[in-house]
Length: 70
Image (cartoon, rainbow, N blue to C red):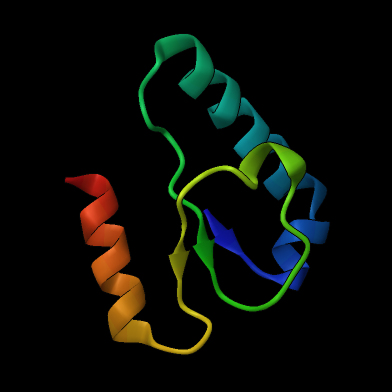
């Protein structure tokens, strides 16, 4: 899930991540890997999740995504 100011204000994005979030809870499997593209409001339900931070270093962000999917 790409998190930016625009995506966090989008109703469609919210509907998508909420559906995947509840699938994740019921299946007990990771379905969402948040990717922070810029400073923005992070939804309360996603604040406790590990996320990849692309705000300052793309290479480090990619490493975080790879670690999350292993």
